[in-house]
Image (cartoon, rainbow, N blue to C red):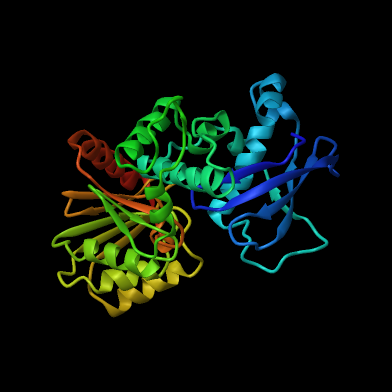
Length: 342
């Protein structure tokens, strides 16, 4: 990888990656890959990042040939995922003289948990807006590149199925080349709107509609009468405020992976003050989807974590297909049973 490339993340970051070479690290097998990342969303400057890989190549992949084939793709997606997790961000003062180091691990070479349809569509919309309309003179964008497939953990048909949905919704032009597409003016207006847009069973929240998204989630939670399951890898204290406002006080289960640092303290305080039943469990990274399940009847899927909904373009979808509902019900039941109490 020697030339700059533009990347888009699921959460709507868009930046240019300019490789700056690589060096041997202190570890004889270690390598540092250097990059300059330039924000293309709102001019927040350039970040210097080094990605450290320690250990021999065959520690990361089944063969050296497989490692060499995939390393550039893995490095790019490592950067994307670190933005998704918050480890990397443009929303901090720029470091002018030092490289922020992130680690690439054997897990980064493993297949990613498959993204949900909402997350796939969300990335397609981001890429169509940024890479075709905003930065690309409306040239078609390839949505099913090998790098995107690895980033999302899905196959070509998953991309093309969701691309078709967006074409039917009038957000993308009808594709002449499978897996490639361009935005319609409807998408541009929706993306730049300050209000959410309903699309059949889906609601789209453009950037800057956090309060609308908050109200939408709150209204869903308030429909619960018996029980409520919230599945979100990055829960924060705001979910407790939403739960406290539910008039029926249903039994609540929260399934998460990496909650905010003060979440355990907040849950303990909630339990002391309120008699409402609430249980929190940590899974072992088995879940990639975000979901709300109301009374084991209504299933909602989210393209972003609840705390980020509306911060960037985000999707909220009511699942209607009985087969998908049955799959989600069984999956969540199994993972909940094996998860650890917070």
